[in-house]
Every structure is written in structure tokens, then in C-alpha cells.
Length: 130
Image 1 (cartoon, helix red, strand yellow):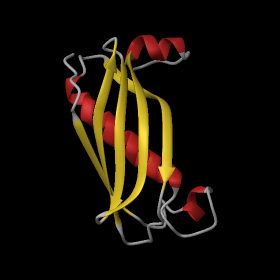
Image 2 (cartoon, one colour):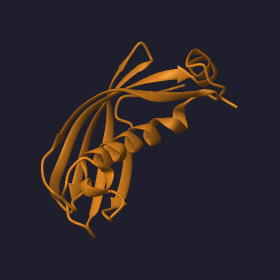
Image 3 (tube, rainbow, N blue to C red):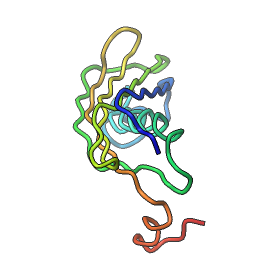
Image 4 (cartoon, one colour):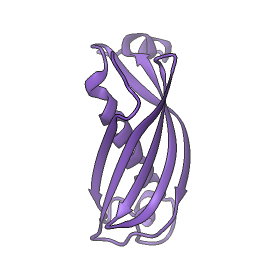
């Protein structure tokens, strides 16, 4: 596994009735929900480092500091960009993440992930990784 600071990730989603606040239970309005934005942020971070993971390893989210800055209406596209900004003990990863609608910044996040051995993680959780 050769992770380096500066690895970038990307996610993109169109706002529709499945990811608005009224549909996911985080609010009453038909605008892009904060939980949906967080999912995009986690996908961008995860997908950026997966090509560098040794077989049998992945990452899990362990922390989020999120700011949802602007509403995004149905039909608009939310583009999320992540950058790996810190690696501690080759295991603890910190990402700087931003979400945009066009050029407008709609969300920011400092996201932490931890590299895990999938089998050990699932066993500790009482689950099978198969």
C-alpha cells in the first residue's frame, strides 16, 4: 500500500426525489439533503484510495466535520472533490472535501478514515466478510 498526500477523488450526483431532505427524513424540503451530500463526500474519499489498497484491505469512515452551505434544487448536479491531506501511521487518513453546484461551493468537510483489514474488521463486528 503506497498512499501519498495529494491523492484526489471525485463523485457526482444529480439531485432527484431520492436524495432530497424530504425523502431521506433529514428535513421537509425538496432540496439536496445533508446525509446525501455526506455520502458523496465519503464516496469521493473512499474511491480515491481504493486503487492503492492491498488486497483484503479497505477504509472505513471514523469522523466528519461537515458544513452544508447552500441549498441545491432538484435537477442540479452536485460535484464533490476530495484530497488526501494527512496520513498518520500509514493507517489514519484525513481528507479535505468540497462539494459544488456549478461553481458555487455548497459543502465542505474534513473527513477521517481508517485503513482496515477487511477480514479482521468483519470478524470483530461479528460478521463474515464472505
